[in-house]
Amino acid sequence: MKLWTGFPITEENAALSLTESYTVGDDPLLDLELAPWDALASMAHAIMLEKIGILTPAELEALLGTLREVHLLAKAGKFPISTQEEDCHTAIENYLTAKLGACGKKIHTARSRNDQVLTALKLLAKDKTLRIATEILILGERLLEFAEKNPYSLPGYTHMQKAMPSTLSLWAGSYAESLVDDATYLLDTLSILDGCPLGSAAGYGTALPIDRELTAELLGFARVQGNVLYCQNSRGKNEAMLLGGLSLTMLDLSKLGADILFFAQPELGYLEIPQEFCTGSSIMPQKKNPDVLELLRAKARVVAGWHSQVLEVSLGLPSGYHRDYQLTKGPFLKGLRTTLDSLLMMQKLVPGVRINPERCRKALTPEVFTADMASLYASRGMPFRDAYRKVKAEPPPLSAEDCEQLIRDKKHTGAPGNPGLDFTRTRLAETDKRTSRVRQHFAAALAALEQKGKVQP
Image (cartoon, rainbow, N blue to C red; front, top):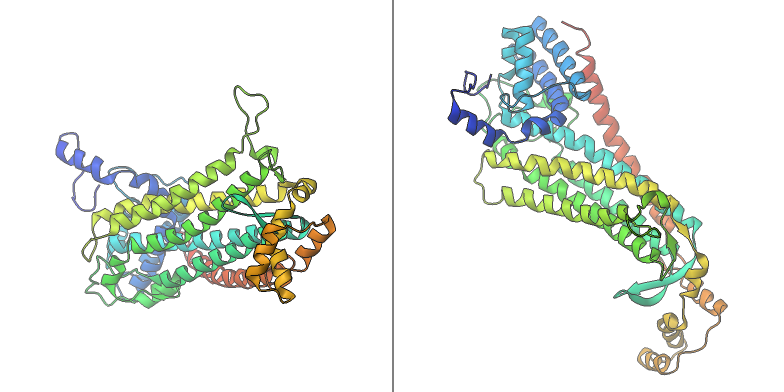
C-alpha cells in the first residue's frame, strides 16, 4: 500500500503503474542501505512521541522492539522493499502496521518522508565518513612506513622529465601529509553537517510540541539542524559537500597510482607492482598489466563526475523539497562506496611495492643536480643568475658520493634530506584521535538507542 494514495496499484491502473515505474526508479534497491538507519531514527522518534503524549508506554515498547527487529533484518540484508512501497520509509511503516496494527500507524505522526530520508542519509553519511577518514589515516601510516623503509634517492620530475634530485621518502611522505589533509577536510565537513533534521517534517515544521533536541541527542548528532526550511534546502548540498571531500581523496589516490605506474614502467624500473594487483593478456604471455591502478585513475574521475551530477541536479531549484533530489541519492552512495573500496585496495598495494635501488641511483644523472649546484655557487657569493648561466654552460662533474651529499645537505623543513615524516606522523595521530572521539560518541549513542528495543513486544 502506498502512503500517499490509500489504495493499491493494480494492472487496471495503467497510468499509475507507468508513473510508478518512472518515479520510483532504483530507490527500493538503494534504500536497502538506508533502511537500518531509518529504523534507528524511527526508534528515536518513537521515544520522543511517547514523551509528548502521542504514544503510551506500552505502544512505545512495542514499537521499539519491532523497530529493532527491522534494524537487525535490514543490517543483514533481509528486509525487502517492494516497488509499490517505493522506499524504506514506507516499507518500515507497513511492517510496523502489519505487526502492531493501529500502534504502527502512529509512527508517522509529526514527520514526513522528507525529514526521514534527510535523517537516514545523514546517519549513514556520518558512519561512512568516519570509516573513510579512519581508512585514509591507515593508508597515510602505510606510506610513512614505506618512506622510512625506503630512503633511496631518485629523480624528481616536472613536465614528465627529470628535474631535480628527490628521495622515495620525500615522495611517499608527500602523499601521507596530503592524506592527513583529506581526512581533516572530511571531518571538518562532517562537523558542518552534524545537525539533526528530524522534526523538520516537509520543511515547515509541525503543529505538535515535538522535542527535536531529544531526538538529536538520541541519534548522536552534535546539535539540532535549526531552521526547518534549511533542513530541506540542505538536501543535495549535504551530499555535494561530502562528495567534494571524497573527490579530493580520490584525486590523491589517482595521483599516487599514476606515479606508481610511471615509476614501474620497464624503461624506468624504479618500482615493481606486486603481481597480485596485476592481470595478464589473453594474447601476450609476457604482459603484466597494472589494471588495479588504471581503474583507480578512472574511478577518481567517476567520483568527481558524481560530485558534479549532484551539484547539477541541485542547482537552480527553489526552496523546499523537490523530487529532483531523489537523483542525488545514487551518486552519493556510490561515491562513498567507491572511495572506501579504493582506500582499502591501496592499503594492501603500497606495502607490497618493491624497490630497485640500483635503477633509482643510476637515474640520478649529473644534469639533475644543476639547480643545486647553482644554489651552492650562490651560497658562496655568486649572483644566482650568474651561477645559473655558469652551470648551464659548464655542468660540473659530480661523483656518486657528491650527488648523495647534495641530497643529504638539503635539510630545511620538508626537503629531501629532511622530509618531515615525524611532523606528518604527529598530525596523523592528532587527526586519528579526533576521528576516534567523534566515532565513539556516535557509536555509544546508537548502541544505547538500540538497547532500548531489546525488550520484545
